[in-house]
Image (cartoon, rainbow, N blue to C red; front, side, top):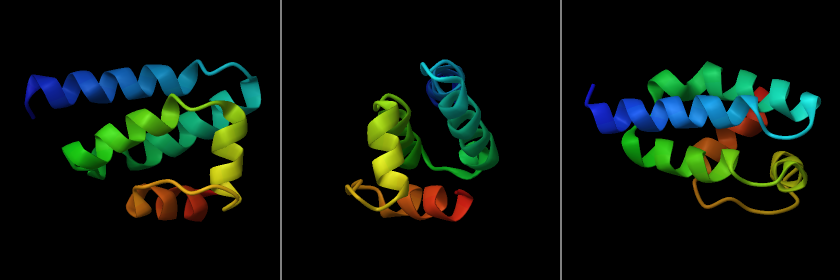
Length: 81
């Protein structure tokens, strides 16, 4: 695995653990850990966008109230929920 991809993975994992509310920290970090090893670099970039969204927006995405451009990540999030 190249270092750029590994750096992105490390960044996503860290950000997923320190979001703001403890409940979302647990939910998002568990989700990220369950999928991160199987993602392409493009999916990782989209996952990075997701983990940097507000807790409220992530909740809305998981309830299908707002859309997220990466349908693969979206499906994984909904299935995880």
